[in-house]
Image: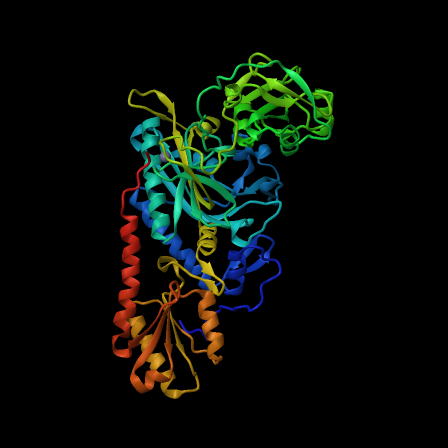
Length: 584
Ligand SMILES: [Zn+2]
């Protein structure tokens, strides 16, 4: 490709609307352009990356027995009503009417439409398992589309749906997808981690694993073990209960004045006690009840765990009025002792404590020497706290490390949620009707591209991993007015192309500084500079974008050198991807 013919309009300034680095660099490098809020056009460089990611995904899905199909984007509302999601999906669902007034949705996901297809076509256990997938645009009317391709309203996704005859079958398919997903992100040249996740709103019966591309800018916090393979989203990470119950003697409960001290910091410094001697009482409201959640003073509550435990639809912190009515005190002085009309849920650490400090349900007062069981009885004891770096691993003697990532893929065991709602049944070996057991498996393709940039960039621009780089190399004649340099660059460009290297010739009539800046910004893994020494001594300069290393290479050896560099790097990544990826 000649740069003079390539639509890759680079920008020097940082676009005002872009907040995150991938968004900034994609706009600056001429990779995407905005059409509307959260809706983007992929320009040639960007679309080449998308196509490469798609190809890797296709190969791995096909390898596991997936069959590619193309489902409609426009979906009839009736199917969404059948599954019950027409109402609960809310404003995120793009809805439209046809000329006859019939309701439709633009697909944000395809469980309904694929279950409808399969219930009509599959009759017998002999036709199962069935793994169907597509790579297609998805639509989600986000309240605040932002971060470019990271959270758009239109985006490219791969979604595979599996139909099995029993749970064992689903388990096999799920493991296959775990392996396929690991291979996909490894083959893209990305550093990633599979982490245990909360199945959340999609629901389902069994497990869920998220695939995270590691990046400091990632919005997801994860913990992983420094010894074993355990890794989990912090929302899901299991807390280990430390030690044994305290053997301290129980002291006499007493009230202490704590004027103006409502926070953990204020109480600990006022009373001169450590935060782990405090019991924090947090009041929540759900659609059906009021709940007091207790965690140690040095811990944070994990609202996702609490939410799952309560089995509610809505969970929010109680408002000031509710807290005041419940505790007869200002906010900051709630405690479990004597608390009425509220369900008390204690973290598992709470019942190990002796002589703790809690709010007294009285403004400017706390209770000292509070003892669980003697002074209050929790209605339930459960793991409801957030896990932090340095805590023990729940699986081995290792310690947990915190890191950030960008969720790019997720695999779910759905079970019979959709086959039941839509009546997708088959006849088993005994001629009995059974519900199909489903799984769903998504990869955000355009999100993966954005995540690749979040993980691989520097102050000058993008550093594409070789397998998904839009081109492997760029050839830059320093002085485009110099006939000899131009001729040599042209020759090098042609021989690289003949050698199956994906290459751009920067034949634009621009200053060398501009071309070098653009080469770094776009992030070609290799840059070949054809300058004065090329004509005189037959030597060109090759710069490696990732390491910054510069090497002088003889023109005669150049094609071999570039080819070897590209192939070695791709082979190294393939070799890494070929290792065993097994779900524990
Ligand atoms: Zn471990």
